[in-house]
Length: 133
Image (tube, rainbow, N blue to C red; front, side, top):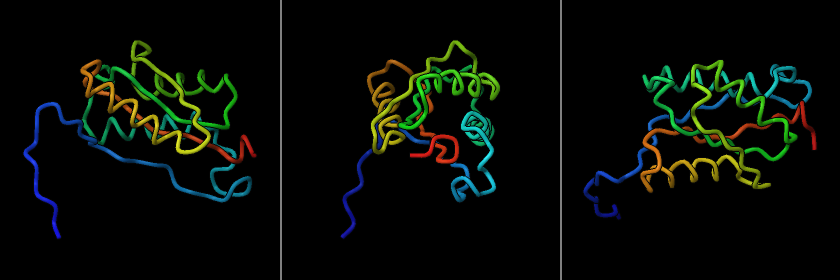
């Protein structure tokens, strides 16, 4: 049974892009020597290209991660700037031990719903090669 359709409302939050890097074997795969910052930068850049959003329009970024050390924040900030999103955009990391990336997307959606921001990026990054369990 198909659920009844609902009229779209102006306050609805819309996800306009969903991208990821390829999956590879940990420590031996094709991306084993690629740092998480490079993976994030690649996805940020591709997101801006695919959505045709100017990097200066991104107001907040939330990335989920549970394995990087606290200094991982700096790596994500560098990836943000290199991808064309200015340092003036907020950046936060979420460590939720399970589904950190999903929590990051929820944070951005909630900020949009609350009218704190209009454009944000939520996602996650892990590297089992760089930070094995």
